[in-house]
Image (cartoon, rainbow, N blue to C red):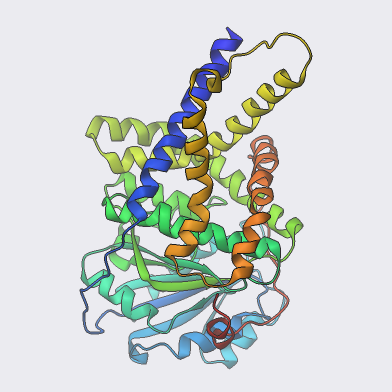
Length: 412
């Protein structure tokens, strides 16, 4: 019976892997947006900040230089449980500093929910709400692209996520490779197939009326995934704006990266547990590929977990002397097929870099250590499974200033 279960899980994982590989081929081409509208949408740009005195000024400077009418957007810094000069710096730079003190409800999701309630009380109204992290930077045409998307009928929009500091260390390079891969071979295929894109936590834009209608309600450790699922369940598919770029600063060390990714996976388990079955069943009943696909995406955290556990079982079984106890799917598939599939999977990363016009040889050299980064997700996910009820939000500290001109001058 155990042998049957192990074999069945291998088949399930193979099918899910094949599904992801199938999707990636639809990211080989990209149609550029042609719809352009005059600047007409008014935006509230919300910056989520907790003790971000080191970096928030660079983002505010960046936002002041956007190629968009200044009277059509306002910047609000959510100073969430700050004990530093984040609020003072924000006021000095001429933007709204909105101070929130609630130590019992800490985290970005709670901060956004509070800020939106405050925003709706204000006399000025906004057509769209943009959410950024304090360590971000954006291209100067960011709001113009969001204006185009809202005018075209999109209600929830995710910008192109890029990395602000890809050359700092091998771990920041790994993040950059992951972003290029996900943008090109995960997000773009869903755009081309008219399915739901996934929110990435920052560089997000929402139609104000939708937020008022739905409420925020996403207070898990992965508020972006939670809000994505809530939208898809309502039949609203988030879209991706490939032309609007946001640059996110990544942790320099493996330890800091592991702590950040642990929080992501803990939150991912929480969202999968609460939404997977209901969304999958709804998608099957409605014959909605977008809902089924999003449900499968929420299941990815279990995909990683099961892949680790059952791979370890098979490795141990193979290493032990004597007769093997469990069947392997590899025993029933031709060797050439496994070689081809393995090559296709691993070639996806450098191929995405080529598609995204990455020119730095250092970034391509970083692919040598990239398997270490990928393998590290296994123990992190395993630990996250046993600690998934831990809802404590952890802050990623930033210790230096990177400005927009630095990013543009060092683009890889």
